[in-house]
Length: 152
Image (cartoon, rainbow, N blue to C red; front, side, top):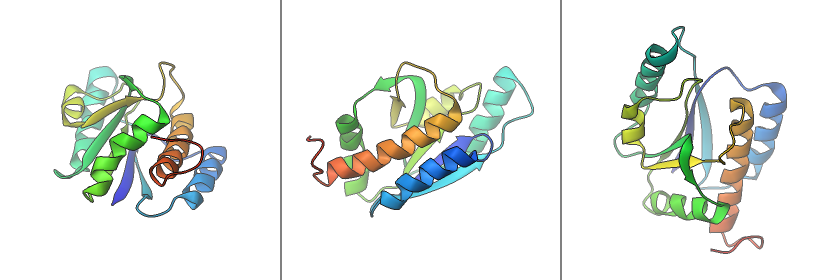
């Protein structure tokens, strides 16, 4: 099982890359994390959202378990996130996590998502979201492995 993050935006800034690398080193199988950065559309508003959403959907297989990060998504704690990932992990499905662009994603991406997740009701810069996401995947792995800090 792999966890692939599809993120619309530029490459990681150095401080983000350093933080992500730190947590990626702690990840163990079955958490095999990879990143695929998709360029921003040169268009604006709906046109940009539609173009970027099409590129995102082209990178997803039918069997993938898709998690969409969206400020209007379900706000869950770390143990609930770990439980959400348990089913695809146990069934050896790949997980694809989507971080849309500045204009978000269109309804086709929302419809494809198996789970829509909000890191919080706050809006964060996309670079920071990438780092928080990586830390939460590390935490989910620890929870599923029976780590001492969380119980589900």
